[in-house]
Length: 297
Image (cartoon, rainbow, N blue to C red; front, top):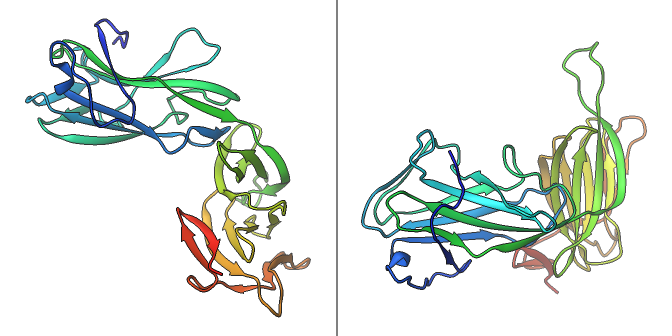
């Protein structure tokens, strides 16, 4: 099955809800949108693209990926130094993708997920989404848009042991790191968990609001404790397991008597606990603005 563009392609402005009309009224048949949450990502961070398709053709459409009828919904990506785009099918694991007349569907695709694109090198990339069907007189395509992928700077790293299945099994390790990287408008911290063969998790921890680095400790169960300043008087205390799953999120405030919070690890038991600070109260200690914690006073 070929995804080459054999027909004349109509280009649709990305993110716009108003579409211009081709000479044959083709724009009235399909509306196609593609959207990323941001356009600058850390290396190995999941790049999730949301695709919106609206069928205004007056006919039900079927995209059967096991057939050879050339119906397709694809995404194409190329690095700035590559001559041609690589293409992959967007089907959300559906062998048959159906789009009823008047229906609007949202699909998500992780561009650097399994079976997709190798976007693991720092640099600039371009992508577009394209839809085609034998019943159309033209394919529809979003205007190419850019993605920037950047490496981070390691602020802290530690090897952690992984619980084995049996008492005689070899104990494996993973490297846990906290990174700093420059976003499009703000700097961010991120957690990365990897070994020599795989990257298991890349999670953004939040914006960098001061030169104070996050405090990191690993407990006896290989859980990662991270205490990060979120504003002048408020901190976020997160706990992750060795797979990158967040086990706890706690908002902590500076205590007028005990001072700012910190983390200590018991040398004998391997338990990590918070010292200082107190549990923060929303509305009194902090507020959320656009998903970011800010001081309430």
